[in-house]
Amino acid sequence: MTDLATIAAATADWPFRQWSFGEAIALDALLEAARRLDAPQWEQHVAALCLSSIGNGLGSSPEHHPAPGRALLALYRRRGDPRYLAAAEALAEMHLRMPRNPEGALLVRAHQAGWKHQIWIDSVDLIGPLFAHLGAVTGDPDRHRTAVALTLAHLRCLQGEGGLASHGYDTHAGRNGHLWSRGMGWALMGMADVLALAPRSTEGWAELRDRFTSMVAALLPLQREDGLWHMVVDRPESHAEPTLAAMFVIALRHAPDPVADAAPLAAAVRGVRGLTDARGVLGRVSEATPVGQYSTYATRPFGRFPWGQGPLLMMECTE
Image (tube, rainbow, N blue to C red; front, top):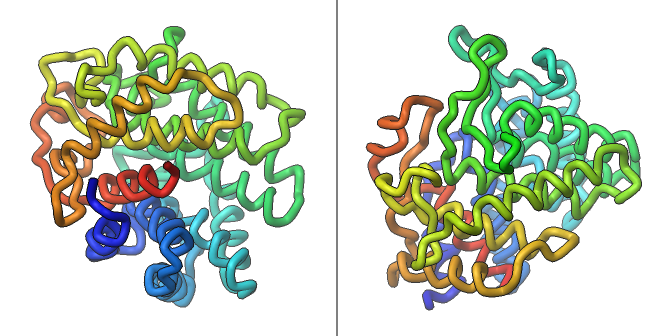
């Protein structure tokens, strides 16, 4: 097993672009590693990135949708600097100004031709948790209601009756129909975060819990013997990819209610650790994956990415 400090160093060594999809989880994990290791350099690294983004007007453009809302609020809790809270509030208000599809899901790329009517499962780990953490920090129940409502709006579009969810949904074309493994990892982490923070009395909380439980139940029979899942979970001819396994562990450890026994979690941990090298780098992580046809998912090249390093580091921090 590679030690936390080594994994943290490999996670921080990424040219963050402020902000692209999949980067926020790495900052969340670095903050948790800083706490676990009593290593303030990792917190300072995250703080510097966030302050730079704040100085550039974070929350002023829909391009900021993937910004690290959880990290901003974690820094506010630790440091008491009102700039972090103000930036998180600005990010939330930016989201609330976005247009919505007929089901009420935010259209985060409505300003871009070709994507203006699309939603993606990745957003489940960005939108709801931002509002849920704001609710926890401010005590505002409206933030919790918004967290649950916006998460459900996405899932009602993306999740099928069996519990699994498509990567994308277009207002005019419907679901893209491909069950992208990392996408369901994002969904599980986002749902678990909202469920853990929003009071159980929040409208829609019970439905969200049921959707979380049904996704876990649908994924369990598809888990491979090595603890991983295929890139497209119902297509065994697609390669195994480790990010869902790490996210699965994080989500189930964070969820307020147990929904699976220990065996699949232990298998997922073994599978992820088996692909982690001595440098602290998680292997066989696929590059950024747009909504597409099956070949889009099956042919992604591998590399070192924050959406692999972040889940690896967070998984080890939550043990």
